[in-house]
Amino acid sequence: MRLSFAITPIRLTACSLLLAATVACTTPPGESAEYDPWEPMNRGLFQVNYVIDGVVLKPITQVYRAAVPEVGREKVHNFVENLASPVTFANSVLQGDPENSLATLWRFLLNSTVGLGGLFDVASAVGLTNRKTDFGQTLALYGAESGPYLFLPILGPSSARDGVGRIGDIFAYPPTYINNTPVSIALWATTAINARSENYDLIQDVYRTSLDPYATFRSGYVQRRANDNKKARVARDKAWQKIKQQ
Amino acid sequence: MHHLFRSLAFIVVCSLLSSPAIAQKTAPASAAAAYVDSLGKQALSAISNPANNKEQKQKILEKLFADNIDFPWVGRFVMGRFWRQTTPEQQARYLKTYQNFLIKNYTSRFTQYTSGSFKITGSKQEENGEFTVGMEIISEKAGDPPIVIDYKVRKAKSSFQVFDIVVEGVSLINTQRSEFSSILSQKGVDALIGKLEANAAAPVKK
Image (cartoon, rainbow over all chains, first blue to last red; front, side, top):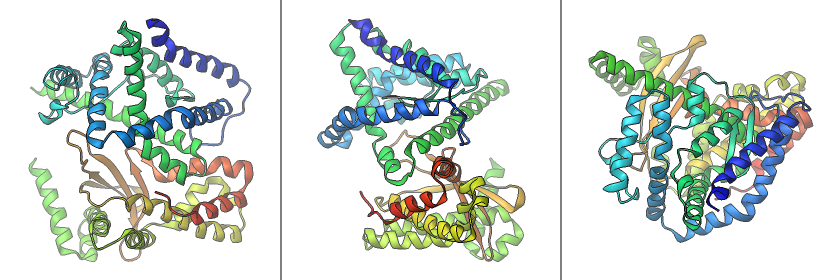
């Protein structure tokens, strides 16, 4: 049981990749600045996501936001961030970023203990800031191009590279190894609802203001991702400079 | 560190002088920074004034946007290659609608806030008389990193004008160009104008 649930996101991504590969050869290149040769398939998945989201994730998130006050949601946010910090740690190590590796390790140790299992972000209070990273970013720092844009239902905007990164990150994500189905489901659900809640205003805003939400999310993701990758590279190089100067 | 203090002090002095003409002659990049700083302060004083209700805030911000954004240039940029395929009449109609659309959608985003704080982090002169002014919006939650915004400005008649706002690497004009491109290529300019008009006319929802 455990595996079947843990594997679901992998299967989802793998299916999308496979599907993407078959559609890729039949579609003409898009008009936009972003590389989106799988646009017809992506737009289809975007619609699928819109329906799933409208029926399941959005209503649940609305109830969550109405029932849980902001202080409580912040605790959930802290908990989810702490749960994911092994992903950041593993990737900071892979990226050769000593500063973020150590900061993340200390964050995890402090917040898991003094911070009561991650509910309280005590590490931030002592100056250990949270800079998340993931395997897609690691691949980017190794020189991998983003490849075609990819929209994944539930997970949202991605790319061929970042989709592969998502699969890699599952191995560093603690809930993958929890041998108890209800607990594991609860953790994945909490992660999903927290993420949806954090993007709630942004998503509302895009649907309210954009004439083509698909294109707005795509463009925003591609630009933001490039910016974050650049920032990660700069931060790592700065950390090494500091070490060399000492 | 010493250098940082000096340039900070310089920006402060320039904004104290509050004479754009003098500032521009001495150091254009600092003048651009002072300009963006003053824009931020005007917006902040509008939203944080408890005497203003939402409609009043919206009005003040709309004027601030209308006066300070280079709409003809931005409108033309986001159309990309389609601009040349439109008649002057279509262009005029499009620019008017686009300005309404952008002002409405952007100001309504700010009216829900009542406070905030920001700082100008730097100013850099680019080619063709353009400047990039960096701003950080300080997050309300402790531990959250600040939001990094770059304002792209260039000199206008008396002062400056903004032609792009880049939030965490996401450029407003590039995103908008991408948003319009498939509508333009599949349905044409009139369809885009129609959609812009419909969106701008729709009531502002919360």
